[in-house]
Image 1 (cartoon, protein in one colour):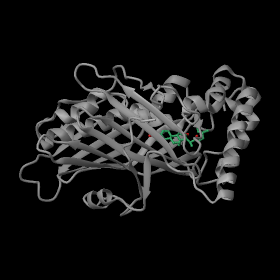
Image 2 (cartoon, protein in one colour; image 1 turned 120 degrees about the vertical axis):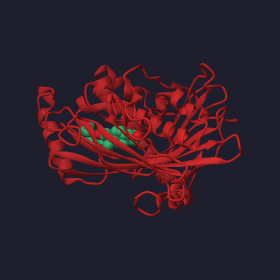
Image 3 (tube, rainbow, N blue to C red; image 1 turned 180 degrees about the vertical axis):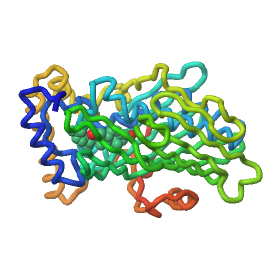
Image 4 (cartoon, rainbow, N blue to C red; image 1 turned 90 degrees about the vertical axis):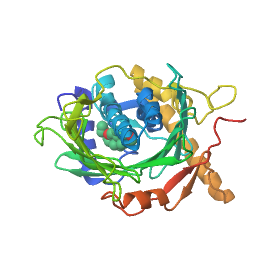
Length: 383
Ligand code: 0T9
């Protein structure tokens, strides 16, 4: 454990021993302070829009083929933020704050150069297991992403294996009045570098982007596999059954944290995505009409815990964290006694998703059905 501060070595060693035996949910395990991040998982959906211009560009395409390529380009361009940004900002992957039930995060990216404003809304819809639901919408362009995610973790060969549960659906309002739908599934993660105390993520297996006319698989490989490079991917776009006559096939290869190019199809040799330039952080906004943040809004809720972690005052961080946890336990007890349940604010849980079932069949997507959190659309806030 070279990256582990000497005073925390034995606590890191016992943490590693315990993750080898606990499987399923690592979110509530206690970790040594050096590995704690001051950011809650409810902020992570903002990674979907670090390039707002790529999100809005989806609406500007003139054909189904161009639109699908724009969706895949936006998706690939989000991976760098999703899976490497903690290494860039904090030196390694860190353990995010474990959101409480009902935790909220609201944000936006401004309208620049006619791309329209994009709004973000996140709600923690389950605490145990942790499940985060989100909606990202550019209303002026008619592009909307709604999804939820959860994780199932296991330990294998010294690494944490994270299977992502949940999916997202991107919808685009077309000038014709039709709505194009894209089902998006998520890659598997391996967290390596644990032994050294310097965790980082590599992606593996396959994720899918499927619409009624196109099936795109994205295969992920790390060092030593098809290109030999870390963070490699290969995206293969093929027309869905019945669309073969009018739409072309494409293959794109590269590394998702840098650039990629077309390696097969009419655009062979051209650049596909490039995320070596700057990204745009979300602007957090309060969910009240006054613009203020309520007590369940993530940056308000975790303020003192985050301050403690950032400033190295871990006594304060753990004291404030206990306060939040005790308050949560009390709320659940009160609900139990009153026979009530915590009401979700922006989402409704349903057991199956017809869009997932219909489009999932076109890719090799399993399971055949998944639950989902339907976005209630009561945003912007009214009270
Ligand atoms: C959805 C993303 C997800 C959330 C995080 C596995 C992880 C929690 C889930 C999957 C986002 O779209 C993308 C990126 C990072 C994922 C996190 C990385 C991570 O380590 C945590 C887990 C729960 C841990 O904190 C494990 C313990 C820790 C000591 C390792 C650094």
